Every structure is written in structure tokens, then in C-alpha cells.
Image 1 (cartoon, rainbow, N blue to C red):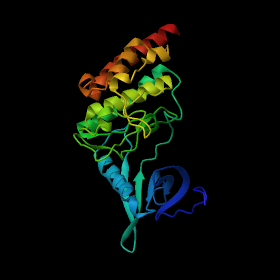
Image 2 (image 1 turned 90 degrees about the vertical axis):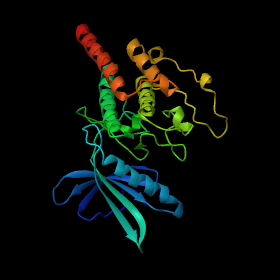
Image 3 (image 1 turned 120 degrees about the horizontal axis):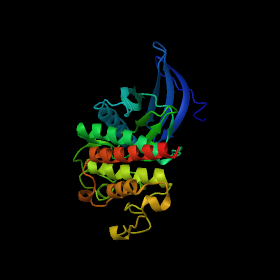
Image 4 (image 1 turned 90 degrees about the horizontal axis):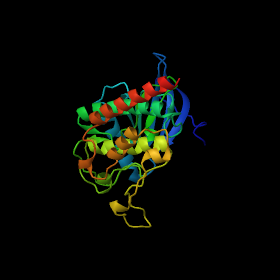
Length: 282
């Protein structure tokens, strides 16, 4: 049975549409029968005894997201546990519906638009860090932009308190920071790296080489990871923006901008200069 045909019933809600899927989870659009308001549902289902970590990740996602109150961060409303014979069978996360497309599926048309989107991301990450949490999986697919330009960062399944050392490697290969691969303490500078790698991809369509080991090879030396500055791949990228991105993706966290607030300030100046140049050329 396909997801579109699956008969999902949620008490008090009308199930309207299947939106997508992830590891052991599906996303749905719902309407609250009492209020008429729309929301998104993340449904995590147990298929085997090994699925506990997916439940743990979803519970963590909800607990982490409850700490935030920012317009560019997806809100989580409540969590529902579905049991059968006292055993947890499903988890339902009721979330803010974030209509739009990810930067992965719909790359912005120009550098100015990209800068505006990532300013909102930097501001949202700064809010997260002020609450002592790291997102730890910023990537173009987790940045949603609506038709009217509203930006939302989503998916806090890998998020964790500042200083956390993960038990296993977690992250997305094209955007992962070295300290995530080496399982060292994570902090705001980890998000700075993920942010820079995401901005690089969004502007160039190419991923940076990262040190996530592949099954068929050894981990390369950091010195082997040559990265072309974004300005060489997209001549619309100003040198100032290219330098900011290269600073963000420094392998050594000490050499990166030390927080996303500093990144925001630099990107804001670049965005203003881009707008001035755009107006001057009109």
C-alpha cells in the first residue's frame, strides 16, 4: 500500500496529505477538527526491536525544539505516544506546518536572495546557541523557504546541548564538520561549519569535500581536502562572501568565526552591499 493510499487515523484531526518520509518516519499534513488550523505530523513507527534509536531521536527532537521561540525555527506543539500491549508502537510529533521548498530542491535564483535566506538561518542558529543547543545538521534540505520568502530551519533530531560528544558519527556527509566525524565536543562552531558548507552548495551547486570516511577508503588527510573558493565556481559571488564561506569551513574550529552572531554581522554587511549594487545597476 502506498503512503497516498494508507488510511492513517489521528484522533481529533483530519489527515489531508502525505508530504514525505525519512528514516522510519513519514510526514503528513493535518487539519485540527476543532480549530480548523493546519499542522504537520511526524509519524515514527516501530518495525523491529532495533528501532529504539529512532524513537529516542524523535523524543530528543521534541524536547530540544521546546526550548526555542524564534520565527525562523519550526515550532513543535506536542508529542503523542501510541502503545499496544504497553509497548510503544508509534510516536506522533505535532509540528508547525512549514509550506515551501527546501534550498536543496529549489536553489535560490541569485546571490542576494541566498544571502537573505542565510541571514535568517544565522539569526535562528544564534537563538539556538543562546539556549545552549547546537543544531548539528544544518544543510540545504533543512532550510525551507515559502513562496512569500519566510525562512524556517527544521529537523532537530540530531540537535544536542553545547559540549555534547556523540556516541556515533551523526551528520550529513557533504556538510559534516571534522569534529563530528572525530566525535569531539560540538558547539556553535560546528553549526558555523555546517552553515558555511550549506551556503557553499547553495551558491555553487557543488558540495565541499569532507572527511567523513567512506567504507571503501581511509579517512583522507585534511591537507588533501582542497576547496575551490565559491567565487571561482560562481562569478556572481563577491570576494567578501567567498571569504566568509571559506572562513566558516575551516577544518580547525579555532580558525572559524567563533559564533553565528559574527557570521550574521559579516553576512548582513555583504547583503547590504549586494542590494546597493543591484539598485545601482537598475
